[in-house]
Image (cartoon, rainbow, N blue to C red; front, side, top):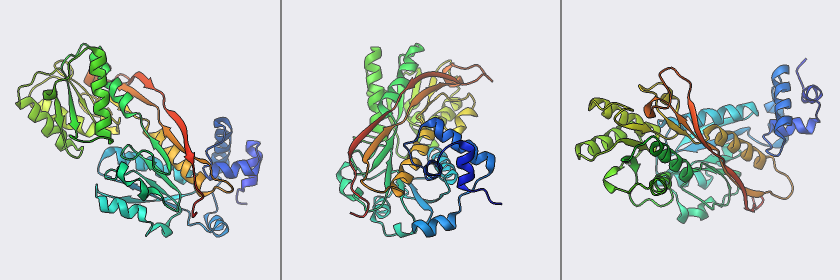
Length: 364
């Protein structure tokens, strides 16, 4: 006999409605209750009957994830976690890559293909504060990232300023006084580069270190190649430095390659820290210290919020803005962990949750 939702409810000691809420990603459930239901689901091997659910709810059982670029490890790993979280709730994720194109980001919000899925998790890169009207859509939407604040949608992001400040202060705490930054975007105001640069400058001021424009290396898209080129330009300029904060791990890995090529010892001569804590950071030589910005928390929260919007009935809940927890993970590139030792959590920045505005009913 197939395992039913009633069987799961009996095993977990909860109501069928509670099991349904967990399966459908309803966010307002106590963690202990959610864990009990999920354990019962795993123990019994319960699987959602997608065909029956879709016929009953008139939904597709699909959601869309739109990200700038899957070749960037952060977005690839984010997508992997979102797919797993959605699958656990019985949903399938379709991926759309916007390729840093304004037109493609607009098309994602236009809804022209939205009839194929029931909701959208969207990480914009090009759209900004002047485009808020585009986010007034008639389908469930969760926005990720830092390009857009104040959109009429649930928003899950990371604490870029505080995390970047913590990373820079960590380098300063190791006695480093000439701390370079790689990955700056000149003229940017609201994106990740601008926010992380702000955190870097705040840390220098707090540590009593002067800001030197010669220590700020611009880069375009954040790839290993642009990180390598920025590091090469800085070294060729002859500027004195003893540490590098790269605004993502791909930039850091490119910088590490150039430092090796110049026979500069990491971390003895130059300490290096990145941002995103991608899986590759554990396998570089030396292993790469990094900021863990709460990527898994962002992914699971985004799925829960979207599924709650999809399944909402009655008066809509206010939009939520959630900032994930972040932490500094020390490894060999800053001298925090000896070869083969476990990662060292240096500091934690706790996130916040805000109710930002009443949400209109979908389709209103």
